[in-house]
Image (tube, rainbow, N blue to C red):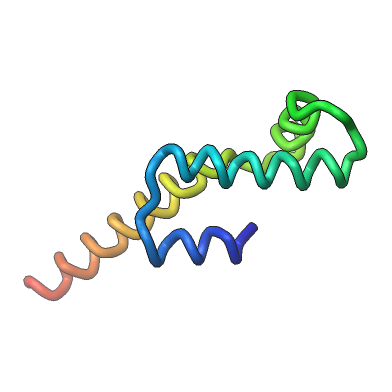
Length: 77
């Protein structure tokens, strides 16, 4: 998962691409947990505390912007 998120930092993605990436994560979880439905796998992912891809990307973007603003405010002074 961290490798996937690092790759997403390098290029912007649209919501359709985020849904597609989330499908990959759910499919992997489905195979790991050995269940047949994506809904059960998605529930297992939530119980394990793994964020949705769109949420993880938004969190990383917000963190980057906050750090960037802090650096800019330090250099302006």
